[in-house]
Length: 70
Image (tube, rainbow, N blue to C red; front, side):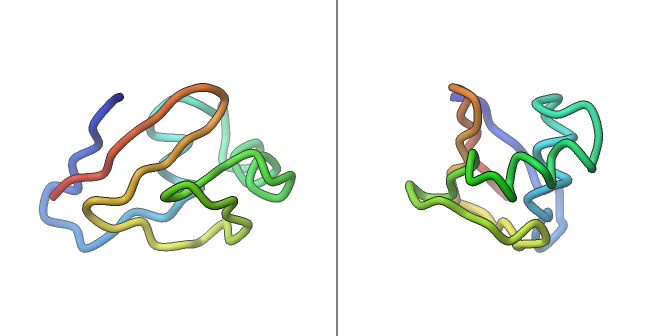
């Protein structure tokens, strides 16, 4: 499991997180993956592209996992 540090920010949007982690090549492909129901947040399918991911949430996509920390 990877770790993503918010570094003082209150949140990161789900589509940006997928892009930052390198799981999607672009914001458009990240949004498409979310629309298709391929992304889970804390074990539940998440369809909101601009969902605010905060510390202690776990995001999974394409067999990869990241835990968001402060």
